[in-house]
Length: 200
Image (cartoon, rainbow, N blue to C red; front, top):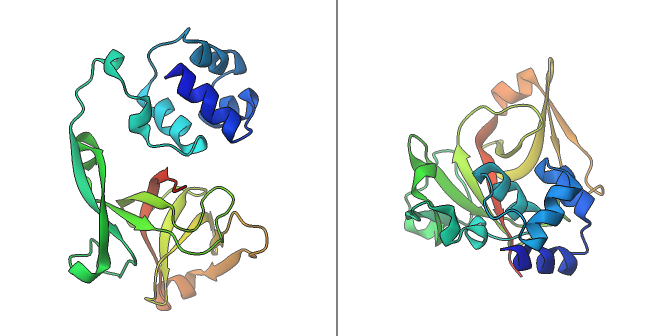
């Protein structure tokens, strides 16, 4: 695991500080991960590390974790309609494996991203793992449907008078929706993005 972290960090030209800030640990901790000084890692940190290094979390799970590796398949959707989870076969373009514990008391689906609005963090063709839910915390990344059209992946910031959908790509301006628009257009939160699986 240590060699993988170091190799991938250099490939992406990411500093130790940047990884530490994103995962929520010190630079020294990241250094110990790279040198093998820390062999075990908390699951939430594995998830964050996999996000910034654009790898699947399973890449960091080895025999030293002592955990069983039970996985289930969830559908990858080319689009998302209002009635998720999708069951129509034409909407399923593949499958992704996720830890079985993730789907306990939850409904998960995966979505293939289109466009460049979330670059550089999320690129066209990447796949996001989504937990189906109709409400999220302000500042989280979610799958949102506007006007019952095709869904979009955006950061959602809530305000007392509405919400804003924010792209990572600065060339796309934030879009504000009033409470009335949220109800009547409508603007629906379909789920929270819990993992990014990048494609190379």
